[in-house]
Image (spheres, rainbow, N blue to C red):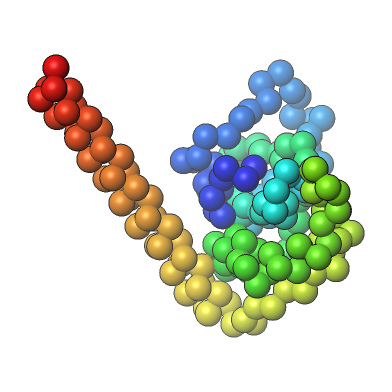
Length: 162
């Protein structure tokens, strides 16, 4: 869970699938676009890290072990909650609620005690979500370029110093 970015795009991100399960068994647990999946346990302060589900069309997705699923009662702009929930301002609330020494955890009840502060204006939420999504996409693009350059350097070094 913690290895995923704030926005989990089911079309692009590698996610594990249950292959031998029957859909009927999981019908009540199926996720929808906009759902938040929180990590409820970790060995560090990444407890409470969340991803916003995005990109679902006809796929059937359920959350895994050690996760808590949350769904907004009213509609929020795409990407907004995924970035907001992972912001420092929200995560600081979780630090006070974590329990455990070696493995920290947080409960669904503790998550319900947290306060959410967000613009009521849907258009403003859209602008904020889109801004951070564009930043993430730009960072990913530059990371791929960096990886390619590192690979190129490695090949040059191998050719030069046989």
